[in-house]
Length: 342
Ligand code: NAD
Ligand code: IPM
Ligand code: MN
Image 1 (spheres, protein in one colour):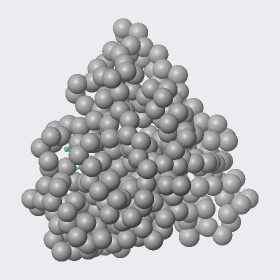
Image 2 (image 1 turned 90 degrees about the vertical axis):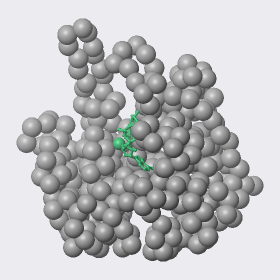
Image 3 (image 1 turned 30 degrees about the vertical axis):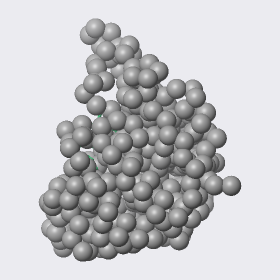
Image 4 (image 1 turned 180 degrees about the vertical axis):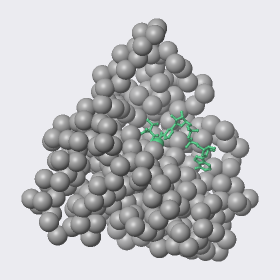
């Protein structure tokens, strides 16, 4: 039976880059069965909520979920009682139990000079951000009155243990755990639990702890230092956008969100880019590389995943550049360039 993939194009540039990804998936012979659903702002418009029960159930029954991005000015509001597109994304991650977000950052040599950072700084960088995705300040209780607001940041031992194991299991030699243990109680528990798991289960992997402000600085000063960055939900969100610039553009960074069981969710790190939506200028590569992660981590199709990644690398080596990378190729031309190299 063909693997079933739920497609969530979402908002802004989402539909444009989803079309690129499905073209590539079809061309690589993945033989997938798609079930496309409105999500985020599109779902608010259709059903009044960013994630409908039907869509969540369809995702639960799928073999994998491919998401582009949600959000946009149409649904931007500071009113706590109005629905927001981003609630759909958080609800989906929580609803599918996707506690581990893997964000690989490996600049492609052809793009070394497309980064605002110096080539000698970024060369041979190959790191993985392991971001905790269903806890922390994103999911704690929220309060809001006219004059006061609060967001609780909560982590339990079990939540820290399971994400720490993901980081140690993927590391070859070093894990850098990033926290704010000089200020936050959650970070002090984080540090203590990571240390315990390390000592008990992974003594052969090197563990270091960095404070998040220092980590943000080191990430652009000496990115080669990092192999696996293990961190909580919000720090991982911020550090991964920063790390994207090592690859030349936020339009290059894919991710996989995984739990204990199928399905995984595969999504670019960037958002719906409302400023360029509808112009045909979006870089589809983060989305196409997310589709490759879906093939590998979601469906076990390693050969097809590698074929997509290698087509991306060769197209870039031959000069493919979208505007975010300093070039002029539009979304369709970029997609065609990848297809030619498949
Ligand atoms: P963004 O990532 O959408 O855009 C930031 C900048 O990067 C913009 O200038 C944009 O044009 C550019 N950019 C992003 N992706 C690009 C691509 N593929 N090709 C070329 N340029 C690209 O972040 P933002 O502007 O802060 O947020 C816009 C909306 O997206 C917000 O509603 C936010 O909540 C949402 N968002 C959603 C996701 C998601 O669905 N996973 C992720 C991040 C932000
Ligand atoms: C991301 C996004 C989301 C996050 C938002 C849209 C909720 O920024 O996937 O990085 O903060 O996790
Ligand atoms: Mn983000």
